[in-house]
Structures are given as C-alpha cells and as structure tokens.
Image 1: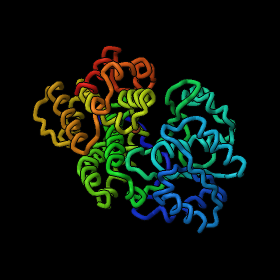
Image 2 (image 1 turned 135 degrees about the vertical axis):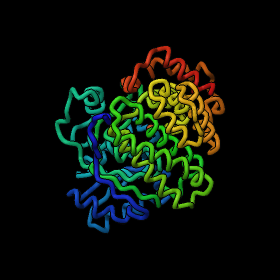
Image 3 (image 1 turned 120 degrees about the vertical axis):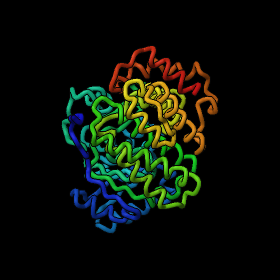
Image 4 (image 1 turned 45 degrees about the vertical axis):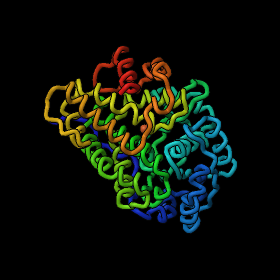
Length: 387
Ligand SMILES: [Fe+2]
C-alpha cells in the first residue's frame, strides 16, 4: 500500500514567464488597497521592484516601497519595516526578492497587526502554543531567485536576537507569483547556490517523517529539472527556457517540503549560516551529500532513485554503496556549477563541528523519518566537511 498522508498546497500560485505584470489584479483580488512592498537593494537595482510596483499602481493599489531587507532576516529589519507599514496603514504586504526578502515580508505581515511581541514569542507560535491575536495581513510572495520556495511554505525563517539563532515564524502566504523573467539578472554564482537550496529541499522532503507519495512525486521532478537545467542557467543566465524550468522546480520543491518537510540538512544549514554568515544555499549544497549518505541507510530505494536522476548509474542494492554513489554524484554536480566547499570557503573542521550543539538542539533535526543520534550528527558534519 502507498504511504498515507495529507496532500496540501498552501496558496494559489500564478506561474509563467512575464506573469509579474498581473500582480495588480492578483493583489486586488485579495482585497488589498494599499500595500507595503518589501524588497532589498539588489532587487531594487535589478528592476524587479519597479516591474511589480507598476503592475500594482496600474490596478489602483497604493504602494509603499521598503527595500532594506537584509540577508537572514534580522529581527530589527522586520521591526523597522513593520513600523513603516503600520504608520502607512497598509492592508497587505508584497515580498519581491530572494528567500530572506520573502521571509521578511511574511514576518512583517504578522508583526504589523500584532506588534513586535510576536518576535519575542516566536517559539510559542512555532510550537502551536500561541495563536495570533489578529490575523497577519495578506502576504503575496514574488520570488526573484529559483531556490527558496518560500512562496509555498508556511514559515518565515528569521534571525532571533533573543534566541541567537534562526527560527521559523508560521505565516502562510496568501498568494504566490512565480515569474522566471525576474530571475534573469541573478548572477551565475547565486543562481548556482540558490538552485542547490531547491535541490536540498527536494532531497530532504523525500526522507522527512511526513513524506507522502505526492510530496515524493514533486521532489523527484524538482530534482530532475534542477539536474538538467541548473548547469545551463549557470552557464548562460539568459537561457530563459532553463530559468523557467528552474523557477518551476523551486516552486514544486517548496510545495513538496511544505507538505513533507526539511530536516537535518536545514538544521545544519541554519546553524552554520548563523555562525559564519555563509549563504543558505551554499550551506545546503555542502550538507546535501552527507544527508543523502546518512538517509540511504533508512531509505535506500529513494536515495538510489535520486542518485540515478543525478547521473550516478547505481546498480547495487547495498545502502552503503547507494549512499556513497548518490552523494558523490551530488557533490560533483555542485562542484561543476562552481559552488564552493566549506574547505574552499576557509572553514576548519573544528568550525564546522562547532555547529553541533545548535544543530542537534534544533527540533527540525528530529524531523528526519528515522532515528538521529548524537554520533550521527558528528558523522554527518564530518562527512559534509571532508566529503
Ligand atoms: Fe532552504
């Protein structure tokens, strides 16, 4: 029998090259009349903010632009943006950018009607012990990278000052707009590591404890699309066929892991990203081979299938052989598109192992669909470093 589970899609997605031009109609249909457009300097300079702003104004929606979002969504930026939104009496939030921008937009949409106490009580919201006194404002997410999947996931990952770590605030988006045209100007290296983030979402979704045949289907297809198209987009950023397929892959990987989940690789990536300010996708790219090797002991068939999609040509049914060969295929793939290893970034093994307490203490770590011991965590970090 197939594994039972709940099939979900969090928010409607408008998908297609050039579809950001329809943002005004989509936001208007949600009843918004004045929105805070959250973005960052780079996205503003690339022109995506102007594209979306024009579409919103064209539909008669007033727009306040706040383009000061920062990497890893620091709490003080969320507070600053929320104050501007509240003072401007906005009734919706539109995020235009990469993962940190989209997460900032989600968090801001919860803080505006509920105040900054939301950030102090983030653990209570995440664990379901506390509900919002006032519903978050509708948040419309428009990614400009093919990696995050945040337009289809229910948490905003923010950097908590109080807890000194990255942690998720639950804020489901109301709508997502996935337009590959907005990813056209993303530099090659960022294209590479954001694509590896999407690959890591799909990989971890396959072996998270709540995986379903439905989330698996989306994950395998995302992996196939990334394997075929990420090298093309890294080589030539104007290859819009490849960009379009990557935008789709990123979104369906997001739907997959929102239904299932991510686990050990993201616990490690959040800890290492927080400690050493390494981009999230780079951390995920370095962790993924080690996660595959570990997961193959419990899920040999799935990791064999993944490895073969990644070009490994695995014939053995031995979990250890499967894990090694599938991990090698992903490691070579990441190297071929220029993603740096932890060693190449100048980290020492001790620095990587120093993430262990934060990593092992993260509830996400236990979301893997099998046992994870303290020794496993040490072995995974060691493997991620030594390869
Ligand atoms: Fe991620």
